[in-house]
Image (cartoon, rainbow, N blue to C red; front, side, top):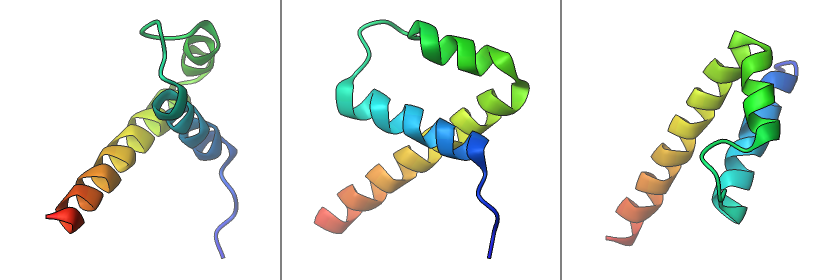
Length: 64
């Protein structure tokens, strides 16, 4: 069993929040601060965004 990854979990939470609530600014202050705090945060966020997009494409493909 894999150990939980708090950076990945936080990145995934930010991605879900972005898509559920929508952001009125390109990078909310809290998200920008988190991304800038450590380079691993940006990598995890980018990976989480890619996963979100892949899941969306998969769902669209199932509907066709």
